[in-house]
Image 1 (cartoon, rainbow, N blue to C red):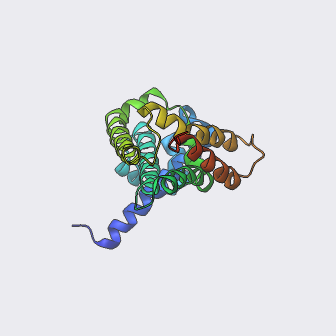
Image 2: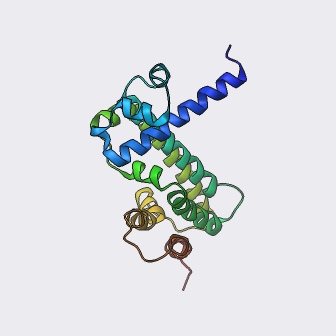
Length: 203
Protein backbone atom coordinates (compact mmCIF):
# COMPACT_ATOMS: atom_id res chain seq x y z
CA UNK A 1 0.00 0.00 0.00
CA UNK A 2 1.42 3.44 -0.94
CA UNK A 3 2.37 5.64 1.99
CA UNK A 4 0.24 8.79 2.62
CA UNK A 5 3.18 10.98 1.59
CA UNK A 6 3.63 9.08 -1.66
CA UNK A 7 -0.09 9.23 -2.41
CA UNK A 8 -0.08 12.98 -1.81
CA UNK A 9 2.90 13.38 -4.13
CA UNK A 10 1.06 11.40 -6.81
CA UNK A 11 -2.03 13.60 -6.46
CA UNK A 12 0.07 16.73 -6.67
CA UNK A 13 1.81 15.43 -9.78
CA UNK A 14 -1.51 14.57 -11.39
CA UNK A 15 -2.79 18.06 -10.56
CA UNK A 16 0.31 19.64 -12.08
CA UNK A 17 -0.14 17.62 -15.28
CA UNK A 18 -3.80 18.61 -15.57
CA UNK A 19 -2.96 22.28 -14.99
CA UNK A 20 -0.21 22.10 -17.60
CA UNK A 21 -2.55 20.46 -20.09
CA UNK A 22 -5.13 23.18 -19.55
CA UNK A 23 -2.56 25.88 -20.21
CA UNK A 24 -1.23 24.19 -23.32
CA UNK A 25 -4.66 23.47 -24.79
CA UNK A 26 -5.85 27.03 -24.26
CA UNK A 27 -2.71 28.57 -25.72
CA UNK A 28 -2.11 26.19 -28.65
CA UNK A 29 -5.40 24.46 -29.29
CA UNK A 30 -6.03 20.78 -28.64
CA UNK A 31 -4.86 19.52 -32.02
CA UNK A 32 -1.47 21.26 -31.77
CA UNK A 33 -0.66 20.11 -28.23
CA UNK A 34 1.66 17.17 -27.65
CA UNK A 35 2.17 15.10 -24.53
CA UNK A 36 5.81 16.20 -24.55
CA UNK A 37 4.75 19.85 -24.30
CA UNK A 38 2.47 19.01 -21.37
CA UNK A 39 5.24 16.96 -19.76
CA UNK A 40 7.74 19.82 -20.08
CA UNK A 41 5.32 22.42 -18.73
CA UNK A 42 4.34 20.27 -15.76
CA UNK A 43 7.88 19.20 -14.91
CA UNK A 44 6.81 15.55 -14.88
CA UNK A 45 9.00 12.74 -16.07
CA UNK A 46 7.97 10.72 -19.12
CA UNK A 47 7.16 7.76 -16.91
CA UNK A 48 5.10 9.89 -14.55
CA UNK A 49 2.92 11.52 -17.17
CA UNK A 50 2.13 8.22 -18.87
CA UNK A 51 1.49 6.60 -15.50
CA UNK A 52 -1.35 9.05 -14.98
CA UNK A 53 -2.60 9.45 -18.56
CA UNK A 54 -2.09 7.04 -21.43
CA UNK A 55 -2.77 9.62 -24.15
CA UNK A 56 -3.59 13.24 -24.90
CA UNK A 57 -7.18 12.19 -25.50
CA UNK A 58 -7.41 10.61 -22.04
CA UNK A 59 -5.76 13.65 -20.46
CA UNK A 60 -8.20 16.12 -22.06
CA UNK A 61 -11.15 13.91 -21.12
CA UNK A 62 -9.98 13.83 -17.50
CA UNK A 63 -9.62 17.60 -17.56
CA UNK A 64 -13.17 17.98 -18.84
CA UNK A 65 -14.70 15.57 -16.31
CA UNK A 66 -12.75 17.03 -13.40
CA UNK A 67 -13.78 20.59 -14.24
CA UNK A 68 -17.40 19.67 -14.79
CA UNK A 69 -17.55 17.75 -11.51
CA UNK A 70 -16.23 20.78 -9.61
CA UNK A 71 -18.76 23.06 -11.27
CA UNK A 72 -21.71 20.73 -10.71
CA UNK A 73 -20.82 20.13 -7.06
CA UNK A 74 -20.55 23.85 -6.39
CA UNK A 75 -23.78 24.69 -8.19
CA UNK A 76 -25.69 21.93 -6.41
CA UNK A 77 -24.36 23.09 -3.04
CA UNK A 78 -25.38 26.68 -3.78
CA UNK A 79 -28.87 25.61 -4.81
CA UNK A 80 -29.26 23.19 -1.91
CA UNK A 81 -29.17 23.67 1.82
CA UNK A 82 -31.88 25.09 4.03
CA UNK A 83 -32.40 28.34 2.12
CA UNK A 84 -35.71 29.34 0.65
CA UNK A 85 -36.46 29.53 -3.06
CA UNK A 86 -35.22 33.06 -3.72
CA UNK A 87 -32.00 32.68 -1.72
CA UNK A 88 -31.28 29.34 -3.41
CA UNK A 89 -31.89 30.63 -6.93
CA UNK A 90 -29.76 33.72 -6.39
CA UNK A 91 -26.97 31.72 -4.72
CA UNK A 92 -26.82 29.30 -7.68
CA UNK A 93 -26.70 32.17 -10.16
CA UNK A 94 -23.93 33.91 -8.23
CA UNK A 95 -21.99 30.66 -8.03
CA UNK A 96 -22.12 30.26 -11.80
CA UNK A 97 -20.49 33.64 -12.36
CA UNK A 98 -18.08 33.35 -9.44
CA UNK A 99 -16.83 30.05 -10.88
CA UNK A 100 -16.11 31.86 -14.15
CA UNK A 101 -14.47 34.82 -12.42
CA UNK A 102 -12.28 32.73 -10.12
CA UNK A 103 -11.35 30.03 -12.67
CA UNK A 104 -11.52 31.69 -16.08
CA UNK A 105 -9.20 29.23 -17.83
CA UNK A 106 -11.16 26.25 -16.57
CA UNK A 107 -14.39 27.94 -17.64
CA UNK A 108 -13.00 28.64 -21.11
CA UNK A 109 -12.14 24.98 -21.50
CA UNK A 110 -15.51 23.76 -20.24
CA UNK A 111 -17.44 26.15 -22.48
CA UNK A 112 -15.45 25.23 -25.60
CA UNK A 113 -16.66 22.68 -28.11
CA UNK A 114 -14.62 19.56 -27.45
CA UNK A 115 -12.89 17.57 -30.20
CA UNK A 116 -14.80 14.45 -31.19
CA UNK A 117 -12.13 12.11 -29.84
CA UNK A 118 -12.23 13.76 -26.42
CA UNK A 119 -16.02 13.66 -26.33
CA UNK A 120 -15.97 9.96 -27.22
CA UNK A 121 -13.43 9.21 -24.49
CA UNK A 122 -15.74 10.41 -21.73
CA UNK A 123 -19.17 10.23 -23.37
CA UNK A 124 -20.68 7.64 -21.04
CA UNK A 125 -19.38 9.26 -17.86
CA UNK A 126 -20.36 12.73 -19.08
CA UNK A 127 -23.89 11.58 -19.80
CA UNK A 128 -24.12 9.95 -16.38
CA UNK A 129 -22.87 13.07 -14.58
CA UNK A 130 -25.17 15.41 -16.47
CA UNK A 131 -28.20 13.18 -15.93
CA UNK A 132 -27.60 13.01 -12.18
CA UNK A 133 -26.88 16.73 -11.92
CA UNK A 134 -29.97 17.81 -13.86
CA UNK A 135 -32.16 15.41 -11.89
CA UNK A 136 -30.91 16.87 -8.59
CA UNK A 137 -31.45 20.45 -9.76
CA UNK A 138 -34.96 19.67 -11.01
CA UNK A 139 -35.89 17.92 -7.76
CA UNK A 140 -34.93 21.05 -5.87
CA UNK A 141 -36.79 23.39 -8.21
CA UNK A 142 -39.90 21.21 -8.33
CA UNK A 143 -39.97 21.01 -4.53
CA UNK A 144 -40.08 24.81 -4.42
CA UNK A 145 -42.76 24.84 -7.11
CA UNK A 146 -44.85 22.29 -5.21
CA UNK A 147 -44.62 24.49 -2.11
CA UNK A 148 -45.81 27.47 -4.11
CA UNK A 149 -42.56 29.41 -3.74
CA UNK A 150 -41.40 29.04 -7.36
CA UNK A 151 -43.15 29.37 -10.70
CA UNK A 152 -44.10 26.08 -12.33
CA UNK A 153 -42.22 25.71 -15.62
CA UNK A 154 -41.12 22.87 -17.94
CA UNK A 155 -37.69 21.41 -17.16
CA UNK A 156 -36.02 22.84 -20.25
CA UNK A 157 -37.42 26.29 -19.54
CA UNK A 158 -36.14 26.15 -15.97
CA UNK A 159 -32.65 25.44 -17.30
CA UNK A 160 -32.80 28.25 -19.86
CA UNK A 161 -34.01 30.83 -17.35
CA UNK A 162 -31.75 29.74 -14.50
CA UNK A 163 -28.41 29.75 -16.30
CA UNK A 164 -29.05 31.00 -19.82
CA UNK A 165 -28.62 34.75 -19.24
CA UNK A 166 -25.65 34.21 -16.89
CA UNK A 167 -23.98 31.91 -19.40
CA UNK A 168 -24.46 34.52 -22.14
CA UNK A 169 -22.79 37.15 -19.97
CA UNK A 170 -20.03 34.74 -18.91
CA UNK A 171 -19.04 33.94 -22.47
CA UNK A 172 -18.81 37.62 -23.36
CA UNK A 173 -16.91 38.40 -20.16
CA UNK A 174 -14.36 35.69 -20.92
CA UNK A 175 -13.94 37.21 -24.39
CA UNK A 176 -13.34 40.66 -22.89
CA UNK A 177 -16.52 41.96 -24.49
CA UNK A 178 -18.38 43.30 -21.44
CA UNK A 179 -18.32 46.62 -19.61
CA UNK A 180 -20.15 45.66 -16.44
CA UNK A 181 -17.94 44.16 -13.69
CA UNK A 182 -18.79 40.51 -13.26
CA UNK A 183 -19.63 40.99 -9.56
CA UNK A 184 -22.23 43.64 -10.45
CA UNK A 185 -23.56 41.47 -13.26
CA UNK A 186 -23.96 38.58 -10.83
CA UNK A 187 -26.02 40.75 -8.49
CA UNK A 188 -28.23 42.15 -11.23
CA UNK A 189 -28.68 38.82 -13.00
CA UNK A 190 -29.55 37.11 -9.71
CA UNK A 191 -32.33 39.66 -9.19
CA UNK A 192 -33.56 39.32 -12.78
CA UNK A 193 -33.51 35.52 -12.62
CA UNK A 194 -35.54 35.52 -9.45
CA UNK A 195 -38.03 37.94 -11.01
CA UNK A 196 -38.48 35.48 -13.88
CA UNK A 197 -38.92 32.48 -11.59
CA UNK A 198 -40.88 34.00 -8.71
CA UNK A 199 -44.43 32.65 -8.35
CA UNK A 200 -47.14 34.76 -9.95
CA UNK A 201 -49.23 36.79 -7.57
CA UNK A 202 -52.99 36.46 -7.86
CA UNK A 203 -54.67 39.60 -9.19
